[in-house]
Image 1 (cartoon, rainbow, N blue to C red):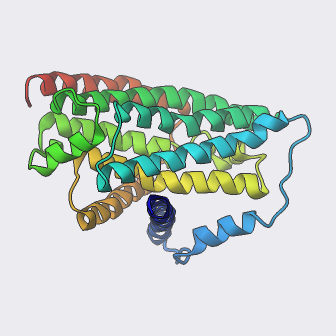
Image 2: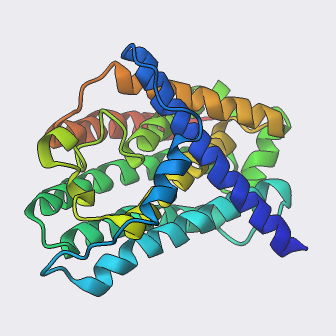
Length: 298
């Protein structure tokens, strides 16, 4: 019975990720006075990839090139499953927050490895950019989580963080919680590779960079992985700062997608140098202030 429930939850995660990604594309189109795609476009695009030829570049590290999208997809699936299990079943394990952080790093790491293994110079440029950006936004997100953990009394259980806020102690309403949410939001924008933090792909500069050599089913696995992250990452941030009843969470999810889209369409792509400066010299010091406020109960 639980297997069926898990399958349904994963199907729900994939569906919500596809709708969220579509909403971002649709709103972007409206910002640019275009019609935009229909709601099912993401699903059609992914299905078409699985009936197309998969080409392995000559000179590529074949095993690593093939395994990278598969490992990324597996990690994304597990994250979605952990989040849903924590919320609906209240079943967790020791330090599940730490496990989620590690699992969320895996898709980016294997995106880098997949790009390096392709033996394409443009993919190499994208991989170097992704590596630098990964170090910047992951550390800032850890600072954001430290603030949440301090406010929860040192708990590393996601379900406890959710339950504490369900009792009325919403972290977003405090000064330190608001700072932590700001850090987490920009982490979300960068993790999903959305403008202004899409430098590793940068279609106009390096022709999709890290993804340039992927095609067919392998590209389809990358797309499904990103589709899952479009659901699990915003959901994780909502659980950390704005949990509520199921309907409330769905509404907050779409509002967060709207905010992501607005930021995307009012900012140009940043250079990798500017991305690093933004995370290290603006958000990181802001996070230190947030930690100080959290320790002092603000």
